[in-house]
Length: 397
Image (cartoon, rainbow, N blue to C red):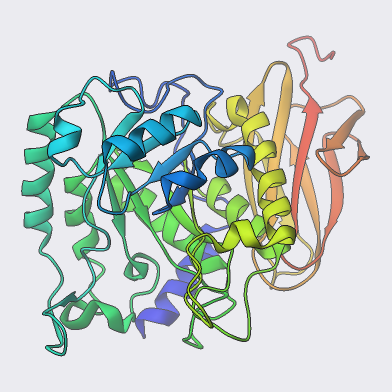
């Protein structure tokens, strides 16, 4: 069996239930200067952006920068703080002199150490950085400052075993549990719409599959974030639609991600560092997505309920991933179609006997819930978020 066929089978098997670990709002409380442990905070980040755009990103609902070009510097940090933006950055000499600055909420390794490493201009590529080197660097960073978490962003080999960019470690997924020993927050990136391989191109579920794998490899001991595409990046003939970007985000959250990092660059036909800010349609969509996620942050940061509900897809070729939460007297069901096809999904809520109404969040509609069951239509890559008033112990609302 090829690695790709094995991966697709695993995703089909795991996606409907997902492997999300129960996440509490105190997940960052172990670090005194880490990300806010307030249940109302959910990390929504941009990758490697100029600090001068911090206010524009703040206006779009982002709250965190991940990585700074040749930074952090005094000017970068001052600009981010003025915009109310947190940052995860390298632990350079400047940063070590500012360990008391609350704007710095975490440290990071160099990007994608699991990929083949350049040997210099025209000299080709050597092997990836060994996991033991990442662990040693992690220990060095933690010794200098144990009050903040360390983020490790890995490449697309997390989700795609056959990725050629891993060089001699291509098709070696066993490396990843070892890499995870060198971080507190584990992230990765894969961009299916922009992908140039037919094995991955436009198969959005590779994002969710990667999240599931990292959750499993971490054994629930690491906080999982992941990167998302929202621009053209390097492809001239395609880029994600707002609908696809929203789908990738909710796939990630439903399957266990606890922080989203948006890759907002474009490389072709011209380089644009802040391409998202130059795309009115996508910027409006991402802003709305960020605002909805922030509104739902206390729900997302609450424990996931394993046996509270089930979902059955009428079209077996389109599985539905489901995550269930309970917050302030309501049950929340977050669901997403995992394939580029349509289906009708039927949800069954355990312990619900009375007639109820499911509010479909952000869609200005409701669905009747009868004997704990309701159905809804999912068009390709649809996300639906439901809120149902919970039953009390005596069966009443």
